[in-house]
Image (cartoon, rainbow, N blue to C red; front, side, top):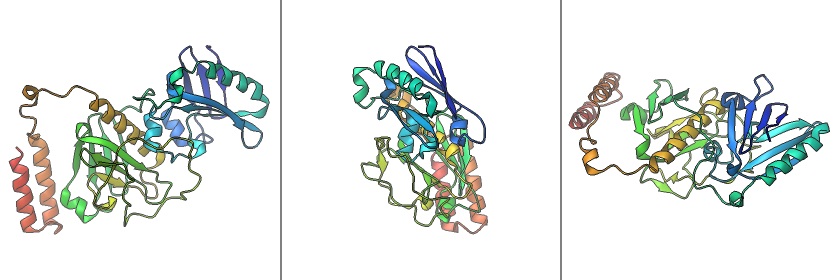
Length: 321
């Protein structure tokens, strides 16, 4: 098509096989959309296109993605508010006829697979490296590993005893994200072997919620990614960070979760390493072991780890060299 349709918070550029969505900067645009900047959505990633009346003399053009096509919506699992939906284009009501024209054009380009879930991600995830500050620690992702570095002021004693954590994406099966705008938000990694079809357990004693849990977007299909049957609460789980007032905001933690999820899925589709290629794979980086022992010593000096716990954990770490 090659045309451009400018809305109130975004501009859609129509190409022969995709739509390039560019988000405007400014106080009227949600910070999540500003952080995404732009997204190219292939026609193959869409299931339908709708045009509905909006608020205050507007109409809303929305491209509905296929379930499983977008890692951002897969990670969000229906928790986004309407205003943060990256597939909505709000237009003045007088442009309804033009919006209907483009809606018809997009519908005509949807293929026979539009009614089926996607078997892989078709929309690109936000790019690593990424990081954000949670209530109890700092989360970082370099594209291959996720790291949690705990804060003295927020982390539980269980997390301090476990020490700072690093998780290769190859050892994960998914990621859980609960919006910080709902009660007890968190980001939790799902290690391989802990998958289940049920929802995650509650956070237990976490920080105060940052906002109401109402008004969440429910038009997106529920996430098909594995959920974890964790025996521990999130505030005690070394594979999770919890949110709070000003910690883990949507525009930082959700793109992070989407990038991790996309990397996990991509690694799962790569060929399994041969035995020859796996020689020495069980050994840890000596620098990482030294850092863990140093951190363990700090916990011991602070009285958070007993003498026996310190000796046992140090011996365990040395055995991994």
